[in-house]
Image 1 (cartoon, rainbow, N blue to C red):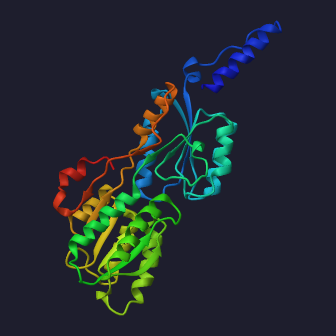
Image 2: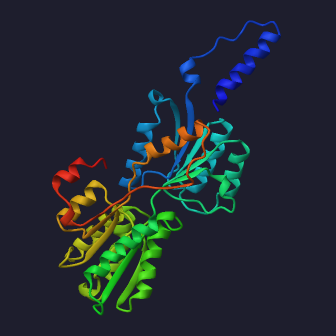
Image 3: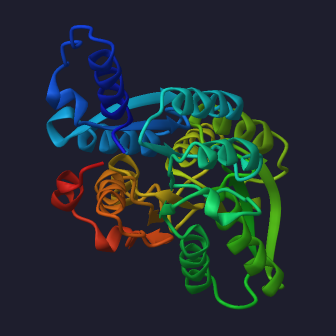
Length: 328
C-alpha cells in the first residue's frame, strides 16, 4: 500500500529499459512510511484539541507514518475538499472526524474507488453503503446521554418539577444526535419534566454564553431552571458564566449543570461543586486508530464499530490527584 514506493519502482524499471541511467532512490525510510490523510473538525473545544494531540502523538515518522493533517475549521465543505486532495495524493489511509452525519456518500465513494480505506473517528456518517468506511472508532453517545438522564432521575423524586434547559452541540453531529435523543426520550417518559428550551451552543463556550445570557434575561424568575443539560464541557463553561452573571447559584443547592467530555477543567468545576455531573467522552483515540491501521496492514478486517470505555463523575468520585493524573 506504499503507493509512492511503487510508483518509484515503475519509474526506475522504465528508465532501465530505455538505457537511461537509473534515477537515484530517495530516503528508503521515507518511502516505507504509511501515509495517513486526516481531516479534523477544527479546534472548537478542549476535547477536540486533546483528540488532535492524541492523533499527532501516534502518527509520527518515528512510528512509521507520514501524517497529512487538515483542520476543517468547522466547515464540511473544507473536509470534502481535503478528502479529495488526499485521494489525489494517493495516501494509504484517510481518517475522518465528520462534522455532521449527512452528505458523505459521493466523496467516500471516490475514496473507495481509489482503493483508500476510510476510518471514521469520534462521529459517524449516515451513508447507504456502509462499505464506504472500514471502521468507526469513538463513543456511544446515546449511552452517554442515558447515563446523564439516569443521574437526573436519581436526584429528583417522582412528581417534583424538573425544569430543564438543553444546550445542544453542532446540530446533525453524532454526539448531538445521541445526547439529544436520550434527553428527549426521558422528557417524554416523565410527566414532571419540562424542557424549557433547546439552544444551539455549537459545542463552543462563546456561542453558549451568548444564547444562554439572552435566554436567562427573559426568564421571569431565577427559580425557573433546575437543570442545564450541556452537550459538552465548553458549552458548560459558557452556561456557567451566564448563570453566574445572572445571579444563579450552581450545584446541588441551585442549578444542576450536567456536562459531557469530562476534561480536566470540567472535573475541577465538578470537584468544586459548580458542575453536578460530568459524563466522560474519551478523546485519546490515536492508539485505537493505529491498531486498526496495523490490522489492515496485516491483511485483517477490522471490527466495524469500536467503542471506548468511559466513566461518569460527580464530586464524590473525584480528588485533586485523580484530576491531575488525567491526560486531558
